[in-house]
Every structure is written in C-alpha cells, then in structure tokens.
Amino acid sequence: MKKNNIIEIRDLDFSYENNLPVLEKVNLTFRELESACIVGPNGGGKSTLLYLLLGLLKPVRGRITVFGGTPAEARRYIGYMPQYIHLDHEFPVCVSEVVMMGRLRRGFWGRYSRQDRAAAQEAMAEMAVEHLARRPFADLSGGQRQRVLIARALTCNPKLLLLGEPTANIDPGMQEQFYETLYRLNQRMSILTVSHDLGFVSNRIDSVICVNRTVQVHPTNELNGNLITDIYGYDVSLIRHDYRCDHPGEHGHD
Amino acid sequence: MTELWHEIFYGSLPFLRYAFIVGLLASVAFGIIGTFVVTRRITSLAGAIAHCVLGGIGAAMFFRVEYRLNWCQPLFGAIVAAVIAALVIGFVSLYARQREDTIIGAIWAIGMATGLLFLARTPGEVDLHSYLFGNILLIAQEDIYVTLILDAVIILPAILLFNNILGVCFDSDFSELRGVRVKLIYFVILIMTALTIVLMVNIVGIIMVIAMLTLPAAVAGQFTRRLWSMMLWSVILSVLFTSSGLMLSYKIEMPSGPTIVVIAGVCYLGALIYRKVQSLRIK
Image 1: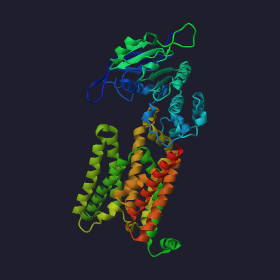
Image 2: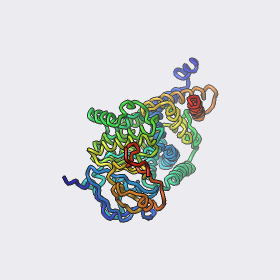
Image 3: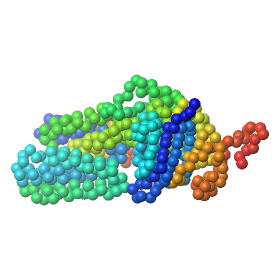
Image 4: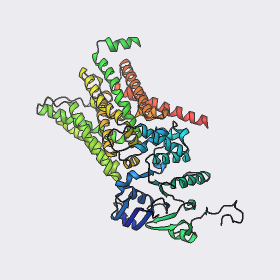
C-alpha cells in the first residue's frame, strides 16, 4: 500500500519582521502513519516550523500543503500539544476541563455535548489520566501535565499529532514509557514531535528532521556523532537508545 | 452594627442606601470580570481603559454645557470612551506585540489628559476629585437601574460563552486551532471589562479601579482551583469589601473609595501571607 503524503513543503522561506532569515529553502514531505522527531538547537527554527504547519504563521515564500489543503484548513485533522511551560501554571482549571477543550469548535456558544464528554473520557482513559479528572491542572507533575495535554489533543480525533517539546522536564524513566505510548498511538495516526535533546530520539521513530535554518531529514538509523555535530555546529553528547544492556550478546552504551 | 444597618436602610441618607445597593449589584460584575482580568493577565489594559474613561466624562461634560446637549451625560461619555478604548487597546495588544506596553501606556496618559483638557474648558465648577477617587454622594436612584442593565450585559456573555472564554484565557493558540474565534472572544472580554470599569468609577474612582478589579479575584485565586469557583468567590469578596468599606467609611468619616481599597488590599496581603505560611508548614 502506498502511503499518501500528508505534509508537503516546497521551497519555503520564513523570516519575522526583522527580516533575518529563520528558515531557508525548506523542502519536506511527511507521509501518513509516519513518525518523526524535529530536532535542532534553540533558535534554529523548530517552533517556527511547527507554527507554519499549524497555519499560525505564514511563509514569506514557498508553499505548504497539509492534508492536501492549506494549514488553516487542515487544523481539524491535527491534534496539537503545546509546550506546557507556555501555559499559566496557576490557572484555575481542572484536568477534565483542559481535556474538554479539545472539543471546542467554531460556533459562538461553545457548549459541550454528550459525545464531547464521551470523547474526553476516552482520551483520558487512553492516556491513563482518568483518575486525575477532578484534580487542578496546576497540582500535576510535569509528566502528568504532558499526558493530560496529549489527551486533550486526542479528543480532536486527529490524523496527525503535533507535539511541542513533550520530553522537556520529564524524568528519564517516564520518557521511555512516554515513547511506548507514542508508538501505540502511531499505529493509527502520524506523529511529529519537537525535541531539543537528540539523546532522546528513540529507534521507534522513523526519521529525524533536523532544523537549523535549513531542514534535513535523516532516517533514525543513520544518526551518528558526526552527523549530529554537523546539525548543531558543535559537539553534543549522544546517547543511543537502540542498545539494550540486558540482551545477551549485545554491548552497552557505546 | 444594627444601628448602622438601620441608618443605611431606613435612615435619612438615601445616598448611603443607593451606594450600598449599587455596590452589591455591581459586585457581581466586579467578581466575574475581575477573574478574567487576573487570569488573562490584562490588568494594565484595564488600567488604560479606566483612565480613558476620564476623557469620555470630560468630553461629555464639555459638550453638554458648551452646546447645551442635555442628553450628553457623563455616564454616556464614560461608556462610549470605555468601549472605544477597549477596541483600540484590543487591536494594539493583538497586532503590536513588541511595543505593546509602550502604546498601552501612551493611551493611558492620553485618555486622561484629554479628559483634563475638556474639563478645563468646561464652564462652571467641575468636581474632578469625585471622578478620580469616587464619590458615593454622586450615586442616585437611577444608578441602581443602570447598574442592573450593565450587570445583565456583562454577565450574560460570561455565562453563555464560558467554555470559549476558559479556552481562550488558558490557551488561546490551541483554541484558535480548534476554530474558536479567539480575537472576537478577546474583544468581548475587553468590552465587558470596559463596562465594568464604568460601574466602578462612582464607587472607587478611576485611579482605584484596578484595585477593585484585581484584588477580590486575586484573593479568590489563592484558594480556588476552578475558574467558576474563583468567579463565585470574587463576587462574594467584592460584596464584602464594598459593603464593609462603605459602612466603615461612614462610621469613621473617611472617603469610601480608599477605605474599600485598603480593606481589599489588606485581605490580599493577608491571603498571600497565609498561603506562604501554609506552604512552609507543608515542607
């Protein structure tokens, strides 16, 4: 079965009002049910790329198609999870209210129906946060908040999940578990995540999209130290996750 | 205490009774809108709208006296100026992100200055002091009806649009992606804020509007974890602050606006200290 392209970017340039180029000559395709991790140094244009895909920013030159239409038209197929550090930590809102926001829609009054509630319930179950439903969002740990925000993205019934820095502020044990969850979700939807630390690209992810003003795509198995130095322009420590210490006949971290 | 109560409701001072009733009714708007202002972090925008109200009041008084336009009441000028200021400030905060605070500051000062110039040219005695610091002596019986109407205009959208407003205040990018008309909702919040500010001018005055808008909600925010309960408690606290402030100011013969604000401010500081002590104890 041939998989369709769900994202196509052709010769895209982007700069903010100061005219300094943030992204240049970007070409990118992303197919149905693929998973990829967007990596690159801070200020390299990762978030900008994400906002362009969501239609919150417009390209200066070039073209973006998402699900065959403009990014703004494609929004209803996308479940978006922002970096939660952008959200107000003291905002008085409980978990189920946050998850329900995935069912907000156009239309003036914004009432929720029974189906909306059922969808939220299902998403909370999927992300194992049902028991937190009545808890204030402000009281949750980093990992719990992240799961709640993914549950919110899932209530949109997305075909594509866009995750902004989901691994920030999460302890390593939770990260492993988190990637298991993503792998499970990836069976039925495409997933694009942003991450500032490359060490955390799991072998379960198909490709790595390196963003540092230009964009390059690498299959995960091509990643090695030289390539990463190229991408970041300086040495960063690399931890490989495709080795398991407990398997006989295999080495530990190299 | 009962003596004071009697004085308010059956006494020979109708203005005290009107002030009391207007304070109670307006508290509903104060609490609900104050919650939006605090959680959406638009205190400085509210301050700028408040100071522009003086421009409207000044213009209305000038035109009324100079051109004998009897319908041109200060209240009318205040409402028009507040709504225009809310629209302009809304556009500035949406489209001029980088210079937002500078422009808001400019609007703040220009609004006030315009009012002062109009008042300077208005023949006859103008009681500027009352508008700046509030004067319950200016509250008349018809203010009760005005307050009721404005309450309705403010509260209805707040209830009907609750989910959208919650979404926009918590995470406006996400709400926009879901198709919510984020900018429209933002303008609705600002216009409701503008109308609430007009209600506050007589009670606490232009200068202290920000205090009355933010302090009850800020105290409530220390103890509540849901938006609707924060609103409910802000309303209750607003009622307590305005009514106790009015009574106390009458009793000790001090101006009512500052008395109300000092009571609210002391409660806020008390709440902060209480929370701090509690969090230390848990550690």
